Amino acid sequence: MPPPAAYPGAMTTVLLTGFEPFAGDSANPSGDAVRAVAARWDRAETLIVEVLPVTFADAAARLRVLIERHSPDVVIATGLAGGRSAVTPERVALNLADARIPDNAGVQPTDAVVVGGTPDARFATLPVKRIAAAVAAASVPSSVSLTAGTFVCNAAMYTVLDATADRAGVRAGFVHVPWSTETAPAGAPALALADIVRALEIAIDVSLTSDDGRPLVGGEIA
Ligand code: PCA
Image 1 (cartoon, rainbow, N blue to C red):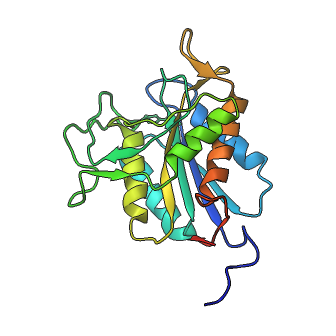
Image 2 (spheres, protein in one colour):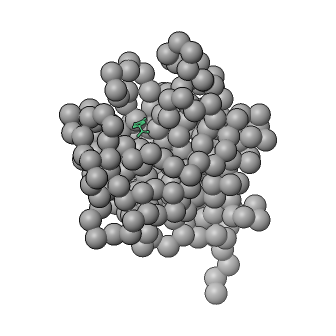
């Protein structure tokens, strides 16, 4: 057996996505935050960042293209959960699209599946408890969430888990973020954008290490 790669970080790719504004809002802190993470990225790992349209069809299609094209070792999709006051790694994605409002293409599925012929739910393969603990330890409120809803974010999470299910060693999932104080509607709970950015950097950092702190190299635990 050859020894593990000697250069932790080499050949390792992280895919980080946010979303455009939706529901008539003019901002979405998830998109702002992933752009900021990209702007100051200085790690050895390759970071792919994209801000996705809030449509059931295009977000899923784009995520599948990005995963196919870049073969990421870690996939963290993010979106806004307006009303939450903490950064919440999601534990489970439902194979259910049941929209309370139309998406940005005017499509409003009800009682529909996200991906036909696949399981009713899929669990995050990100280390969600370690992420929440590490973010909270950095003084940014964070806790694991048990529902990503049944709108586009849940569908995006289900899609990345479906698209990576057969990719050994890949860690994938979704993190909902609150409003940023810079963009929050009056009265909505919010965190400073800088804290949301830091939380996502910590989520990446934790996802790139094994449970005992060793680096994740090329999709394998070294
Ligand atoms: N939040 C929505 C979709 C896009 C976003 O940022 C959601 O939670 O489904």
